[in-house]
Length: 265
Image: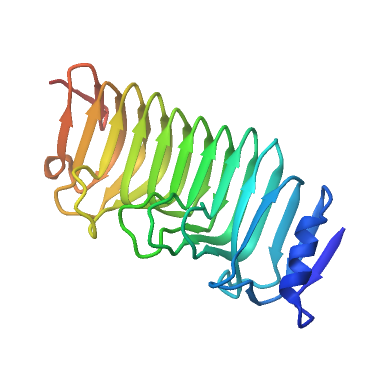
């Protein structure tokens, strides 16, 4: 069933009821406007397959002050909107147990004082296109934290991406602040930019504990970026800046291939 929200004075109540009473396959269309508020955000658990579609091409025209939790193999689809959580002690979005989250032309942000992840996924699947995953003004919070999960991203910006025992596919995307892989994680990419110019992290890119990163066109914005590889595999072609301007640190257990040439400790 398709439900359009935004034509009445009680839009917040109408949207809340649409979410609570949703059935599998429901599409909730949102007209431009702000739903819920910074002082009174809506926290919800999704137990159905639902789509939220902003009736606009500008993702900032529709703002949801919400926190979403989705699990039990449910699917959540977002398009043409922004989701912002303004309070502490909740992720803006969390997904578990086979949940699937799809986002196109969206912003997911967490504008709080604490350091919870904006998005946390465990045994979940995420797909983002033309989107932004943000951490408000914080530079040491994690935008997307993955554990035993999968991510596909195209033309998407992440403020700090962290993965543990997870697989990530990135195309034409940007990671701000830091990118870290741990515990058997894998990342495959085409045209990836890492911009840590506003942070003082020890490493711009860290690949640890039997993880792997492979791809083409890796761009570091920061002058003399720091890359650390520990007990892992690094196979990348085409760098900016040139490799002699990148500070590589790796151990004897790691396999390093740069532009088709193997590096040895």
